[in-house]
Amino acid sequence: MKLNNKIIISLILTNGALLLSSCEKFVDLGAPPTQVITGDAFASDASANSVIRGLYSTVLNINLSGTTTFFTGIAADDLQYNATDAGITEFASNNILNTNNNVANLWYNSYQLIKNTNNAISGLDASNSLTPLIKDQLIGEAKFFRAYAYFYLVNLYGDVPLQLRNDLYAFEDASLPRASKQQVYDQIVSDLKDAESKMQTNYDAAASPRGRANKAAASALLARVYLYQKDYQNAELYATKVLQSSDYGMPAPDKNFQNTSNEVILQLGNLTGVTTFGANYITAATAVPGYTLPDAVYNSFESSSTTDLRKINWTSLKTISGKNYYAITKYKVASGTGAEYHIMLRLAEQYLIRAEARCKLNNLSGARSDIDAVRTRAGLTAIPSGSNETQLLTAIETERLHEFFGEYGHRWLDLKRTERATAVLSPVKANWQSTDVLFPIPQAQILINTKLTQNPGYEN
Image 1 (cartoon, rainbow, N blue to C red):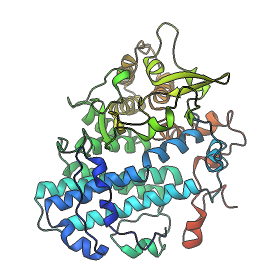
Image 2 (cartoon, rainbow, N blue to C red):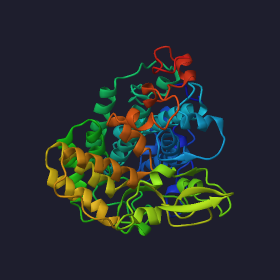
Image 3 (cartoon, rainbow, N blue to C red):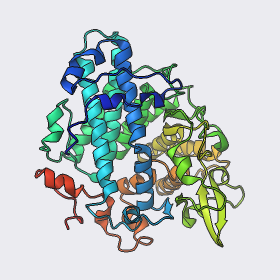
Image 4 (cartoon, helix red, strand yellow):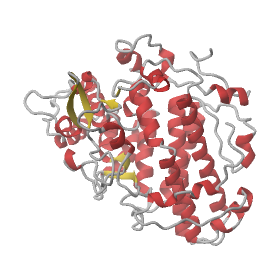
């Protein structure tokens, strides 16, 4: 995990105004990390707030939204890649080299975010001059993002090094071994519980709409984490915390991805209102989008008595040179200015998390009710009342595919966590191997850190 010696905490502050609706500049620190941590960065509420705003800019600048979406989408079956970049086509064929630059950048950028959060947490903890409520909120936001980064690392790579110290040289020495998946999950849960206890219910009114993490964001991510760990009681509990709030709702699909949508639990704002998704999914009428919806997914939407409104509003047929492509039109704006932000967490996921948890807890009527909340928004009829557990779980998998295609790797991670990847992907992926469910540890990191080991299937 070797990082550039010149990277210091001031990177947290760079371009921070991207998050805000205003163009307020961040404080210019310019001091070494050890001096910044104990110095002016955390001396006042305003400067400490600037540091945490910088974490959001870090997520935008490293394009964590895009990398956790595009590469996982084409590794699964919910995105089709239409260009020829060799480093990306490796994901489509599930023949990823351990020297793949995209894999290396995803690893490196995730740990850079973690390093920034560790710096922030340490500085906030050490400060005695901050307003207590503000200090708690900022620590909660930092821990939320540390948990978020580790969630993707542990799901994409398996066992990963667990770095929690604010130690400039801990990363430079590259001396950490891989921690077990359970250890990483335990830390994620610990961070999110602490974040939930510290953060406010209300959103920061000075930031982009729903553009700063709050208590509900921590609860929503906890619900997901518990579902992934098969802790269904807690998955239901934390999803319910979000679903019982009057702050959130389910707007019509055509309004769903606007930055004013009340389905949003957390989104990453920017100055232009144009997202990575719009820029990659939408092209001019005669241009093939880089990523489209595969034919099989498009054809899997219900259209017998009623047509799924998600199919109508979130996809679009494009015929170019006699070939059909199904563009993804969840986000409508590709360039210029718009009113769309990167939606990280939204309410539909909480309904489907709770539906799956209730199904596993033998509350089949409750599970049907939650599935129907998502289907009703899509203009579909209710699930048959006599559906058994197997039928409901199949319906949930289908609803998750139709709801979250092209978003943050949901499909890839769903197939992995339910152990359905081989059954679903081996018929459509040439040379599929069960070991393909994990990405390779970047070989450059293994050469630097002899305590790292490679994932099975990528040794050569």
